[in-house]
Image (cartoon, rainbow, N blue to C red; front, side, top):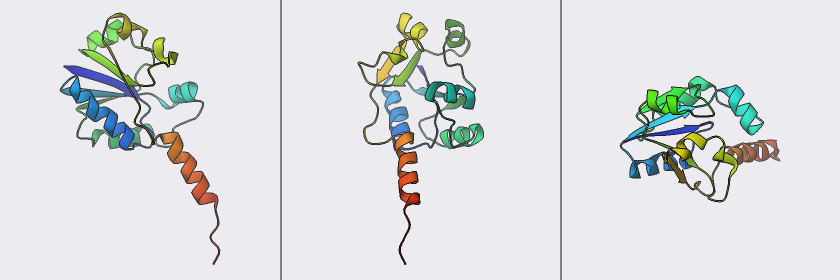
Amino acid sequence: MRIYADIAGDLFHYGHADFLKRLYNYGDYIIVGLHSDEDIFNYKGKYPILTMEERKRIIETCKYVNEVFINTPVFLTEEYLNQHKIDFVAHAHAENDTTYNDYYSVPIKLNKFIRLNYTDGISSSEIIKRCVERYSKKRDY
């Protein structure tokens, strides 16, 4: 089975790796779709720290990933799923979070959607927050 997961993939961390590893419960070929910087800005209200090329290269090193697509659409179409022979689309978010229903309406309608939980305790936003806090503190010598 070919499983597709679209992500920002910024500041790749163990939560991303855990998510990708869990996808092997559903299929044996994992495709990661990376959104453009502009789409990430429109979606999250901030630009990624890493460039597209940096995000692509780090995600390609993950042993759970077979293929990486860049500049993937935010709204998936049936044509896109068929073109890339995608069996299921996966995303990590809270079960009661309906924010993503529009983004994944096509795979949901086609019964090709897998929702997984986030990995607790880590996120790119949390890493950025830590960096700001830790690097803004001065050492007393």
